[in-house]
Length: 324
Image (cartoon, rainbow, N blue to C red):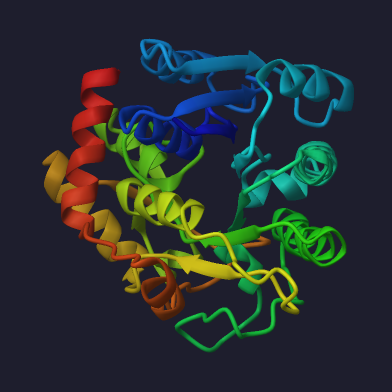
């Protein structure tokens, strides 16, 4: 029975990843600081589900606190596999308040890197990066070979830093690390700051939705189950030759892009109500379009996204109505 540490276990992606690991019989150690960036009640509801599994061990802690992480790690030793999903999320919020991004995304990730490299017989660290890292790139679809040195939000800058930090540890300490660039993840139990959540809530309550850049945007919307499949596939495929120059980084997306207006139309159809649209200019930090080239993940990990947006949005709306 494998023991896997999932940081950010009470978060949207962390919850789904932890649940899948628990269902397949792994022991999951969950770290989360339960901060109030969005509803703590929603995080507690996710934890309630995870806590029903006897093989789930949860620690309410901040990964940027070295001493507390070391104590929890020592209690759970040996932790030889880690999926690092703890991070301060949100492109726009990072422009408003950059400090939590430094604490969680930079200091927190450093603490995790240090613990992993000091663990004897450590097997694999998988960490989340983001499609936001592609910044001002104009060539679609985005491939891992493209330059990522022009981030247009502070959030993206911290994730670029994570990739560079991981690379330095990979080179210096010779332990297996894999990075995953995640593309616009959505689905049940999602975060309230995500567009699908805001739109669904507003449409159901007859309130206007903010449509930025007058709707002239497109995203590679990727359903949570597909992201979980790719993440667990990556966990099982540590890089074999860690003396190679670079650690592996994979795009996990849906490989297609949908315009924001199409996404809203599908949502309207599923809810059975028209949205009141409040058209606004482009926001600072927003990328106009994203689309993933996933051939590298397909070839190396067998990654195979299966969920069209109609199905994914339907599942989200069903969950939203039943939860709220």
